[in-house]
Picture 1 (tube, helix red, strand yellow):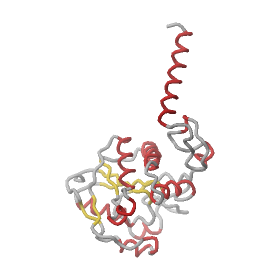
Picture 2 (spheres, helix red, strand yellow):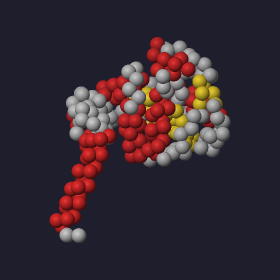
Picture 3 (tube, helix red, strand yellow):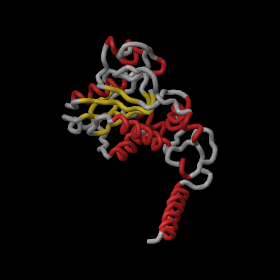
Picture 4 (cartoon, helix red, strand yellow):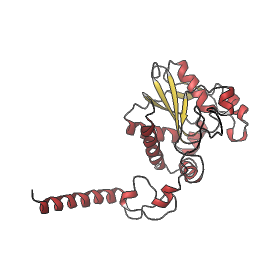
Length: 246
């Protein structure tokens, strides 16, 4: 093939690719941050350049277990007093700014499609760090939350993530009881509140596996720790936690 024909072929393929993207994301598709219309090359990340640059990526010195910001040492004051049941927690973003907006748009405003974008950022972070995992499990929502919201937001994130990571997604956990709204509780009260709140929906899937537990946000880590304890009681050899924000 001559250079002229080759360049025309490449140009044709580029146009075909952009046409495909435009058919998937029609005109009017807008940045989830500022609302400006996005060009096709930005559709996969759902943000314009300016908003993408403003994402609150986690930087600085972090606790080697739970990932919260610290000033000295390797552990935060909570982990230094008592380690959680999970082995290590990861999150690409601090829970602020656009990261907080993503979470609230999904959970409070019913924008289910945002789960896929959250999963994309989480997968890129997971891949860059080489996090160990055999199976993907989500922190299940309460029946009350499912009835109100109409979907399980963590399951949406976990399924989309598992597809990208080419890992099995297993619904191994179930809610046994509904506890108080944790946003109103102290650190110690949160751990006490979730005790016994989770059980096994399937006891076989965790045995001898490194489980990647998926949730949207890690705050105190009480829920993740309780879930990890249940999974380890089923034989999981390790439980890592991956959330969108911390």
